[in-house]
Image 1 (cartoon, rainbow, N blue to C red):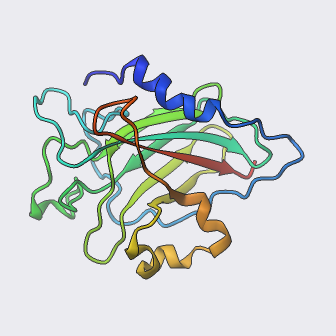
Image 2 (cartoon, rainbow, N blue to C red; image 1 turned 90 degrees about the horizontal axis):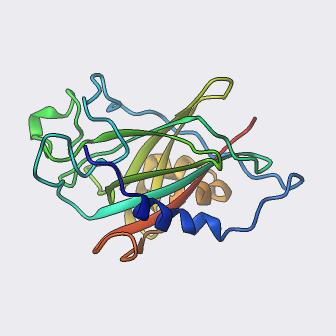
Length: 208
């Protein structure tokens, strides 16, 4: 699969470059955990990089609105965490997961469904995916797992701000209201990265 271009990565990275540093004495609320759910891959795709929109060997592009997820992994005292693995997975634009338990409905063959990235020295990670969509019983969300040597494993779900289904979603409602900001992303138009694309920022915080 083609790599996400350096220009696109720098454009999305600029979002976090403008954020003032977090001082050591300031404690950040850890990212609230969530269930893994039933659709974590049993078989990983051959192409499992950070671009979920373009699958290696296929000419077509995934259905749905292209969306960049620009994130940063930090400790609860604001220190960046490098070398950690971040995995994400989500349903396609039709609400179907690339999973044997959801295969009967026919997943988009041009959507990777799952991807992984390794955090940089500043804790940054980036994915090119699609804006999450709802499916029966769930509000739009992206699943994420963070893991690494010497790190506590974090399994969580990231949500879209302003979705009317959020307040009816049993998992979103289970999060303490004060902690919801930590997993609720705001999407904005990002023509500076890619025409027609969206961008959201996520900060994942580990208690280490």
